[in-house]
Image (cartoon, rainbow, N blue to C red; front, side, top):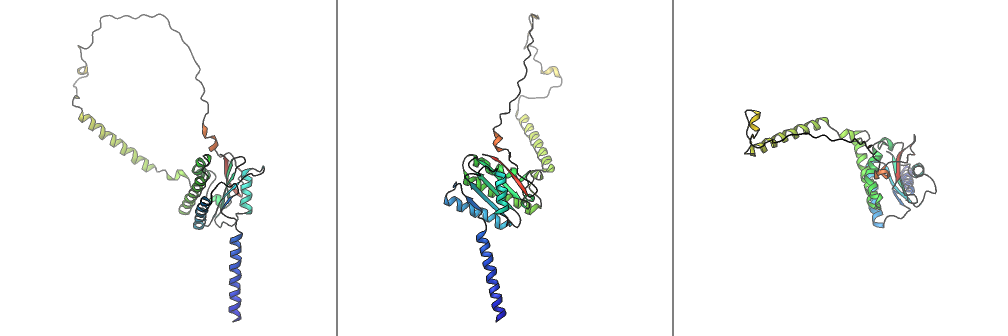
Length: 262
């Protein structure tokens, strides 16, 4: 009886500790800048928690009105170190600072092995930044969650971070070239076969119509010439994609990630 009672009390204590820990864990969505409606926040939270549950990670979105002068990357890294340390397979935070319209994706030491700075962060950026620039915050955050899901699924399947070069197949390229050339030759033969006025000639002069041209006079008149050299203008860099570059880098041995402005 005493053993059973002790076991029951111990289980109850463990359950209480786990419940308290879950309650104390930082939420996956913290919208302090009030960018989302209640329905949008609920939908996004469900999407983030779904990814967290399937891969054993923490995937957060945090918006703030201001970082009070702190760089967005440093601010996001601090969030990881203090609020999101419970990701078994890594933690990642997308931070939005509305005072300077900065964004930053921060990964901890474990997560940056799954989502690399070189390929993973640009992949995430390309997914959510266009909507972010348009002010479509709910869509941007949802695409961040979906893109993270794809990157984590890639790592789970391949055992290495996502790299678009891995999807290139020389064999597939060679097959495509052969098929394209074959199709082109067949189509050319079909067109030639449809041309009733085309026939082979035994000699080149058979292609000439001797009665089609009569030269009655020939002369060359040379007056003068002027040479004018104009320097070729240099092409100015007018690319509007500057805001899409990852310009903020606060990564170190314990953190990965990157960010910029929108």
